[in-house]
Length: 317
Image (cartoon, rainbow, N blue to C red; front, side):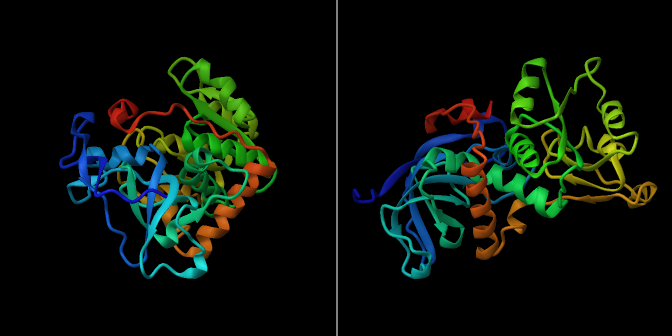
């Protein structure tokens, strides 16, 4: 492998705001600390969480390099990386960490995985964060059973598409919401049994839920939209059902009275992926499950578009 350079291109922000705060610039290549792996990035994931940091919804010290996932090859290893992890220079790997919008990223070794045979570096990057989010939601936020009716909001979004595929593989029945007629077939292809266009005058989500559940409601709602849909999600869920509010696409959910949940003994949680894969054992367990599903179930890894790093503002638009 070629020697590691001293400088690299990266996308950094030193203040919050719109896409104008994204700075494509030269910065030093990070030196991996004792327990870190330095990765030469080939693909970098662009996710909604990146916009949360950019806009200040999620506060973070500045300056910062955005990006939470990537894939590429091992450029060097810190002195304390355990040999039990089996990393060598040149290995193809995927990771979840910070500072991914760059030519090189130093990531803690316990959040780096070798990419298994049969999965490309591109698909590994496109699946690791969104796919693991979806998988842990259906296993941990609410343990979905075959035959359950489940509501997935934004069913053609990054996590939404993975949810539909995983729910189909588990034998659940999925109602998915989309924003336009053009996305209806995409959601069905991903695994949604029923699709509702969630636009005024075009579709009634609550009515559709009641029609398909005998007025009982869904066992779980996976809501990545947030503020604009939270109250309706509570209406859609069944008695003793679960609302997993995992995203803020429309803004953060405002405070609400906990006594509201007593109407149906419903449960609400606000999970994050990283607390489900906190240990190396958990990370490997769910990642192996995801790789298996991708190969055995032949999941569709949808990649909207690939951009050059210098065009990151377009990707955020």
